[in-house]
Length: 419
Ligand SMILES: *Cc1c(COP(=O)(O)O)cnc(C)c1O
Image 1 (cartoon, rainbow, N blue to C red):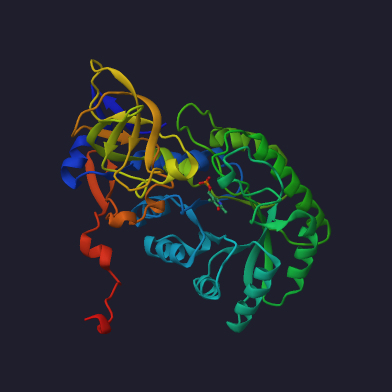
Image 2: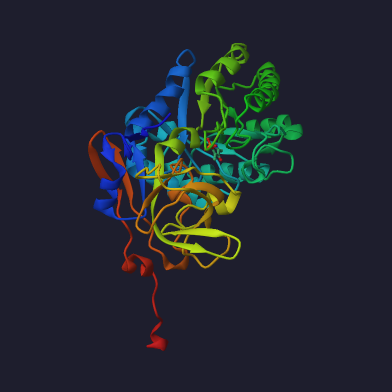
């Protein structure tokens, strides 16, 4: 469910015609719906209201500080994966006591920054990292709260690049060594073990991998509690999928129904880390048609957005629906590739897509682009990054302006010797 709907032949975001946003900030641009964001966050809150819980939004999906602020005001926490994300989350007003820090390669500076910010806990991904956090916390005269991230070896049945809980994956501590690591952690003077964490992958459209991986983790928690470990937090990660085309992913309510009975046996505070399912369908990328081009065997629609603006099609062969901002049912349907101006054959937004013919200057909406859209964008081909706009009711709010050419050179210098 989202708030990008046609009124007559024209696509709106909430009460604002998409066309009007483009008149204000130009094309391409990202547009987010405030109402969709709020609704998706509350879908988790309501589904899990019977269980003590924390929704720690995985901000790598969309880390604009206005988006974070909107969620933080509703009581949302943050799953962070870098010092930069910690900085953003603090600026946005997320409570450090609602922040959890994951990632396989936390640096000394990042660990120190997180300890000094008094975040809720680190999700530790290796024995080496555990020792390192102990050392850094010791030097600060602190004790670090940690959960150990366990790799449950469950196939999430999603794209290999977004699978994270298989034996061959770089994430988490191998489950056959989990007990041993908890015992080691328990002995470390500057570590306080408070939880168990797992996250098996992203864009999961079935409930079974959640249930199967949770069962494995609960087995471990049972053993740990029997041994006298005080496991206060169970973090089940994120990964709930969204509808890009015809997927029918579980609703947070379905997830709650499936896992609540399992949780009744343990007394833990539940943490969830949804990213995509909160912001994915709350955003679109709007782009303008530059040229129609017929190659010998293919038709191309060349648009002004490219892989540097939305990488998912190139990186994962991900599908995004592409809709006209102004519908015209009288024009014929063609099979086309929608491509950007970047000098790479991998630069496409859609391949062999059946779409109504569009002409130069028409606006197209690339749907479900709110997650892993802007955050994965780059300046490749020296293309300034596009603006982000938040729509709330009738209000249009620019939450990141378009970069200028000057912005492209920020931090670069020509050494004196080449003067
Ligand atoms: C990426 C990530 C998430 C969020 O995944 P989504 O599929 O966007 O919900 C949650 N937890 C961790 C540790 C992650 O790396």
